[in-house]
Figure: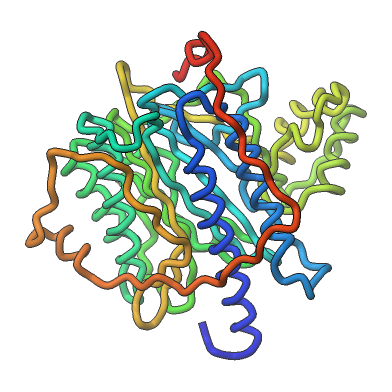
Amino acid sequence: MSSSNSNNNIDTKYYSSSAIVSEVLALVQGVAVPGMSVGALCSYGDALVEAYTQSVHRKEQTIERGVSVPTTVSVNRIIQNHSPAPNDDYVLSEGDVVKIEIGAHIDGFVASAAHTVVATSVPSATVTDRRADVVSAAYYASEVAARMVRPGQSPRSLVKAIGLVASGFGCTVAEDTYTCQIDRFVLAGQTTFATRFNPDLFAPDVTFETGEVYTVDCTLSTGDGVARASDHDPSIYQRDVNRQYSLKLRTSRALFSEVCKTRSVFPFLMRSVAGDNQMLRAGVSECVRSQLLVPFAVTVDKSAGDVFVAQFKLTVLCNYTGPVRLTRQPQMPSVRSATAIPSESEIGQILALDCAQAELPELPRLKTRVNAPVAQRVAGASAAMDLS
């Protein structure tokens, strides 16, 4: 990005969004413990994002700000998009692999990040089984990917490198996960490609250019990584602003009108729009069939047996000096894999490259306290949900 005043303002808003995402991710991660409700974690993350985005750039009162993608908490074999309603909630158990994803924007300038933790009541415990393999693989894949978002490097090389890391730990890259060029009010811009190698769908034959910003999603699995829709109803939807259709049902027109009035171009939770209003909820089906609303399916790895999926996601600026990490990378969870990456290997050499961390602004203290949820032990609650 150039150093003009207008672009400095853009930098500031990207940096503010990144600071908020980094802070909120750390706070939510800190309470992802056994006995904690997944739904409560998601609500906590969204409330924190809303509170922090209202606390910055206060002189620009008319700009849009808030959640760019609702907080999701996807457990074990679930790949993505899990923000459960109260009747579909899940309580974390000891040893669960928990993926937390946060998204925020200031004036349409987006940042998002994800981190994986292993839920435990014994913080000093070290995980050494297949969970350690997939968490380590996803972590190092994200570190490699971040270092490859540099001028002249290609998306195809990035996809290849992530695949090498995954295979080295005996894991696979999950389907339907993407690296996305982002822009103002745009979550998936021109250079957007699948992180999993697909011979029938090559990454674009282009190179990263100075000034571009990307969200890099490294989601890996101990299974085959092949995704299927789970039994959990989608809770996240997005309006297709390029689609027009004359809805037939009064309930559908009422719902879509409410969405247009209260929601921007970013994904949103349907329950935040329809709530318990059965008339509005009845309009969801036609809005989806007509493609006015696009549901975000809750996907799982379809492999049989015990499968664990880990995710690390970050926002990176392609600077002329090399990659600049905008969102902070939290400390790696307490895991120890038997697999090591030799420093002389291709991946080891990439990891040796520099990757700068942006100096993020200090966030103001919140005027209204957002209370953290409290973990509760409920007999049989964890068994109530099938994570398949």
